[in-house]
Amino acid sequence: KTVTISDHGTVTYNGSICVDDQNGPKIAVQFGPGFSWIANFTKAASTYSIDSVSFSYNTGDNTTFPDAEDK
Image (cartoon, rainbow, N blue to C red; front, top):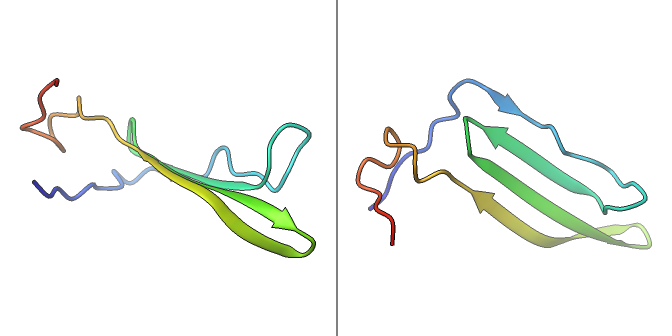
């Protein structure tokens, strides 16, 4: 089943970083309770490449996923 996920009017970018001692660069976008999209990058010289992309969602949200069931 296809669903549309609303941004609930509260999109944040907490967790986005260029680089620090423990993490590489990433873009982290949160929208609504329990929904996030994160892209992690690697850097070689002056070129950035996407290392991984993840999307997390909350199937306990009965408004967005009214027919979700535990498996």
